[in-house]
Length: 168
Image (cartoon, rainbow, N blue to C red):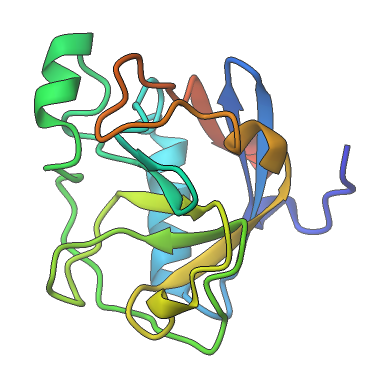
């Protein structure tokens, strides 16, 4: 297991296959980091599905409004909602969308990110300066690579639980 330097800025994502450890970047995107920690601490990411997983691109999850409901409902609605909290302003930076980085999913409006996020399967530099990067996988990327593909997947993988390491 990777040594945790700052447990307050480490997210532990429990999948059926194991734990993915994400290091957050509070100096780069403080509002996005705070939102992920807030939603993790309230358990809203628990049982949320990966509703959009594109091979060679990314795995998207975090629809806390629809993504934790039953299989058929989740497939029909997941990806269309967020939390009850206000949308976030973009926090673009020079951090590139490299393999394993966490990006804020949003609509076509740059300031529309809320709860959804994606994990890049590969370097996706065409997203640079268009989507906020606010973390990176530091352990368990091989587990992310095994997430079921599809838009939506027929049998989507889910986040069993998502916690701030300082709280565990």
